[in-house]
Length: 302
Image (tube, rainbow, N blue to C red; front, top):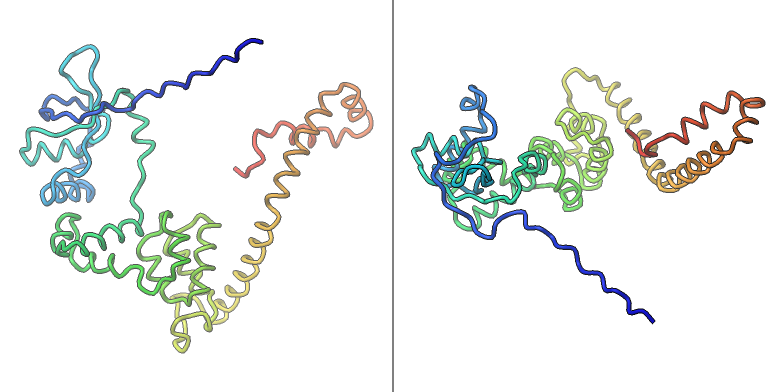
């Protein structure tokens, strides 16, 4: 009997060097130039305020220039390097990449959403950081810090869990707070199903919410430009829409599986010359439809 050959595990290359390096700011070459107006942006002011108050939180990512020893290419952190130059800081600790591809870093950036920002601010306050220092670091006023801390007050845990990783703005939670628990969950599901987390859409859900599902049910809803009759109609239409979405969700998996099987079956049929000849002679109207289904690259919606 031949001894089975044991497969060696694939070698995984490290994405970064094991140690960070401290480099002169002037030794780092940017891979693209910044717009002239970038220093007027709110983001630039925020980074400047953060570096001034707490230092550089995230190190820039650089790669060694193989043709010029001692020279490093800046892959990620152009704004941070520019801020350091403006503040007169001459050295910076950098993360050294083993790959000089800058596109990967920009594509994989994970933006901080409102719930994550709330948790970050709350954790800082719990550790004794004064709200004034947080406001200075984020380049916002103290009132905005207090709004971030209170953002989830009155929001049920289920709704928070649904929206914790979604780009839902802080103002949307302030609208959700006006609804009762079950309606908050329904509203969160509507936002996710529509992939729309804008404040106008949340406000439209609030306008279509029955009075009995509002926290302050005794206070009549008032939406500028919408009459009482229009709001009642919106309530009925949104209720029907939610029923339709629920119905689709219940059958989506089964329908998708059936469509995938049908697609493969039709592709096999159309590969048979006798079937093709029969369709062209007897059912020519079916042929384009069958071909369109068989040639689908995906059964998922575009």
